[in-house]
Image 1 (cartoon, helix red, strand yellow):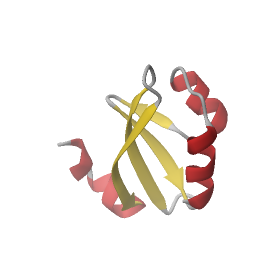
Image 2 (tube, rainbow, N blue to C red):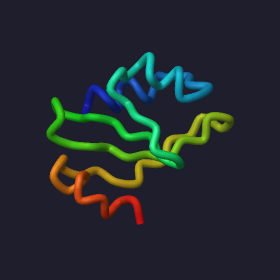
Image 3 (cartoon, helix red, strand yellow):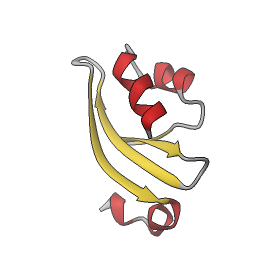
Length: 73
């Protein structure tokens, strides 16, 4: 999580392709970007406003919680 924060804080992302360069395991699940944290143990789910350079962390959960899909509703 600390590594994710340090990278995200310094990043200048103009779109999902830029995010993917920083985090190759990131996935787009509109309107969210899903990050694999801790070697597939956790998921960080964020909304991103690329124009304003703002990241809104919406959920942090275990992989088991993530696959249940509650974050989608």
